[in-house]
Amino acid sequence: MKQISIVVPSYNEDQSLPHLAEWIDKVMKEHHFSYEVIIVDDGSRDGSWQAVEKLHADNPCYRGIKFRRNYGKSAALNVGFAAAEGDVVITMDADLQDSPDEVPELYRMIKDEGYDLVSGWKKKRYDSKLAKNIPSKFFNWTTRRMSGIYLHDFNCGLKAYRHDVVKSIEVYGEMHRFIPVIAKWAGFGKIGEKVVQHRKREFGVTKFGMSRFINGYLDLMSIMFMSKFGKQPMHFFGAVGTMSGLFGLVSLIVLLVLRMTGHIALTTSVWFYLSMFFVLAGMMLFLAGFLGELICRNSSTRNQYLIEKEL
Image 1: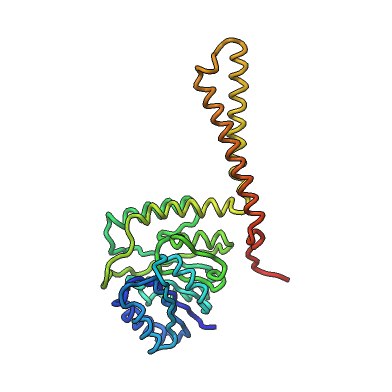
Image 2: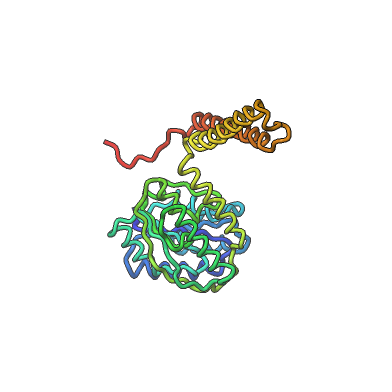
């Protein structure tokens, strides 16, 4: 097994890749690491794949995976994780804004300090404050509060993982922003942070727009829900449905008593329609929970749990 696998998602970065490879090789040789670099070409339309082919021809430590079309960074990372063979897996972006000089210390923190995952923190950034820095700070604050993981920069592409971590998690959609949350959910709780250098982009343009923050919050909601109720949806839908139904039923009983005593007319009372709404909503939510349970019980992965040790 190699000491380090470096997974590099790449999309239209043909100018950056040769410089990144030269930098990685220099760091690896200086520290005498055995390594591999897996470049996942996420459907690039420039000469990125030709650059990867040349790197592989010059150095067999470089491997390439090419997508037929652009699937996104999460898909690239997931495929890269599946292919990685190193004892420690490092991820970094292909745009030269992540520094390979950080790799030795990230490796040491995993091996010597026993971290499951170490996330980079770009404390000093060179991005636009309005378009990236301010929204990113708010996004990270929200994620910290909801997940209980106190990292400053969840979305930093420079991260290090124990081999077991990347083989035990699945990243899809746009969930790459929440890999620490996914890892914690999978049982890998020792998560650290390291201040890393952030560099100005030298080539190309950024591939991320403001829509990533909207999608990010939706993905965060999905992860938090799945982590708590993914295997037992009735616990959520059933509880909410029961409370809604009981509230509506009690309200109806009160209204019927008031009607029988002549205090109100049901057809002119807004509370009557609200009570009926809560009863019907409760029934629908309970039914949603029941259907969710049926789907989970008939899923081929319903009993797949991560087992750390066996005797």
